[in-house]
Length: 477
Image 1 (spheres, rainbow, N blue to C red):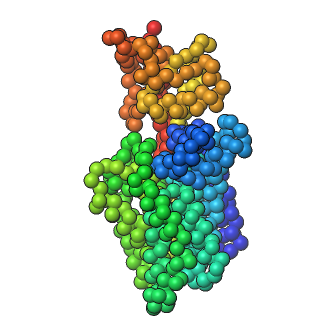
Image 2 (image 1 turned 120 degrees about the vertical axis):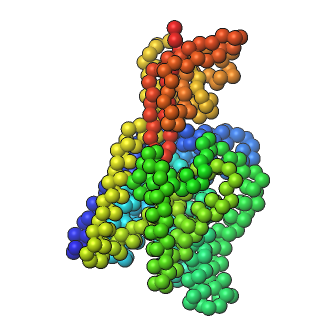
Image 3 (image 1 turned 90 degrees about the vertical axis):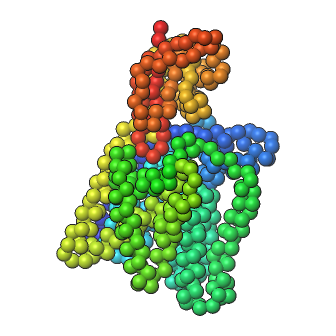
């Protein structure tokens, strides 16, 4: 294919991928986004500096994203659109696509097109580029730091050192998971520099400017965080193996809610091992990065796990680098003749079509339909309505936010279960379904030995990696 035609195909892929990320940035904000926003508002309104410090030792705080949401609040005033809060992740997602395209084009036009195509349609990458959390910026930092380090190892310059350090700090501020990637980048740099210098002192002298500041930051943070970190938001931890399977399945176009077999994960593992061996045989030290992040990190978590306490998104860095490695394999096969090219074509089509299928499912419900629930309640009666739900924290936080955004604060009030005081609320929201069908009728205690029945009005679905399905009940008369 002529280079100008390849360039046009690549530009078209970038436009479509960027459009998908803009589309995913719509819809209602979900609990983790609103939780981060509320934490910033509490800290902002506090006179104690300790409340600001404590904010950054909570697992739901992704520092860069939380500070950005605070900036949006100050710039746009109260209750800006979800798109404004999500703009950092959105821009990071679009920039990540551009980086992948540039990285692939340096190798060959076909590598650029294949890699960008798989990244452009990847449901998890689209999802996390469209929500106000730290995962989208972290993905950008992973790709950016990897590209800069690769370029530095070929032709070292001071500017590349500065760019790498800046991207590393950007990644650490985006999400602590970047530490795993930084470890892989460090060992990659160590091996590549030592292979040239053959002197440990000279190698260390090259590594200190690249990683010294990041090491100081991580050490200082860890010294405080080890005793002060508050973990929250992990309501439904899964076993590590299930979490790995779920993230990898979604990344490669399989519905993890339906496909529970480990065979796709096993097949991809063998493919990744083969690709890493091939890179190592070619003398490319790049193989070290996926070996650590894609293979060693999940293996360590499997070994040390004593109880189910991980969430599938913890393996997002592993999924990103797996997708990059598989893209390289498919691009190499595409450049061959005969059955290898057809095999590559089948792989590209299957992964792309699988992810399109996931995106279609995501379009029905997305991260949740909380504003629709609020509007349903408001339309049912003009009198003041009292609402409760379970879990109190997540349902209450979401309800209060969307009531405020809808301008219905004078009519609708969320009441925690402990504050009902024997007076049954008008509406009840079950936000803890997790794949189970909602009961048609439920009975709740009102205190004093009484009980009240509630009838299901509608189930408002969510699908995929983020958000909650809600079942709305109204008190039976």
